[in-house]
Image (tube, rainbow, N blue to C red; front, side):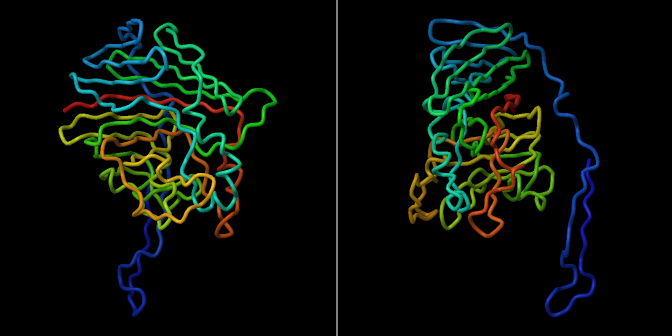
Length: 330
């Protein structure tokens, strides 16, 4: 529950017209305890064969690759909602401020940590499937616990813990990427918006319900960089024109974006190149739903290289979060 207060100019002049909005503020009066969200029971049918684990419930079927521990397919009424495996996400395309404070070099190990992780084990654990990974570039363990629920939804719990005494560079982001077919172009969310916002740039983005096309979520900065994020997200959905899709519910506030491009396409690497947004081509095949616990803040109080304040940086030695994926059908 929230209240918005807006102030308007009532006496116009040659500079500020009558009715011009002078100031606004939103006061959050009460918030739902997301951790107390009621979930369906974990009674889905789980089956194992030599190559895959599958879970079935309420017309939905989830497929997990037994060799990688990844969710590779999620079908409802025979329609696959995914076009690629759900993957960890530790990297963002560097902003100009990131280049200014050298994040792209200091945190470079995170750039490929997800792709190069090594599966240690993937097995059934009660009514869940548990994947344990070892991160090669950053001495740490990464775990994903999938719990199929009897309403066809999937609970996902993610945890990362650095080795004791190990050096771990600052995380640019901590989350996962859900890859879906390009036809899933309708994005809606309950969180801060409508403009993009970040942990240290969000007070002007009010909490509410917003929607738009995926193609409109990316801001074309002169120099391509991180874009499209939304903070304090309680739920988000991606659907196609027929009404099929997925909804993500956070068991704590999330940071979410839906884009038609991967961070790698916006990332020049270790050297800042003179490229522009019109040099970047969106994917013709996929859209990407980024479901994060958090991203590093933007910083730049001195206009460029200043670090974000400590509370907006991911410098901890362990992080965890949970969310639920629910299939949507017409």
